[in-house]
Length: 139
Image (cartoon, rainbow, N blue to C red; front, side):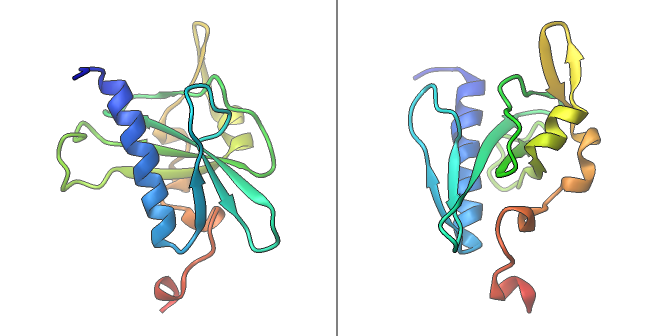
């Protein structure tokens, strides 16, 4: 078995975000492949899609965002494990951020664009940006 922590963190995060979307009664689909342009598609009632990129980090560090493309219907869900990736009883932090905001708020470090959670703190748990509140959340 591979010991590539980044690989396991990335795959686990995509499925975790997909699970969170299903729990909000969203019609979401995981895209497959190594060089996919988007991780998850969410079908909206009018037949259009929301595109979701999932970015994760096992610690508190900034997250690379080099491949983020700005689109009105594209969002980035950051999954921050706070050094507790292996602790399955700890829920990570989620930040749901419009792609435009990600690109505008990122730092440039050497040849990389990166974003730190402190730059997007107002987007913590903002699931309503990509899926409407379910009836159970409204009550």
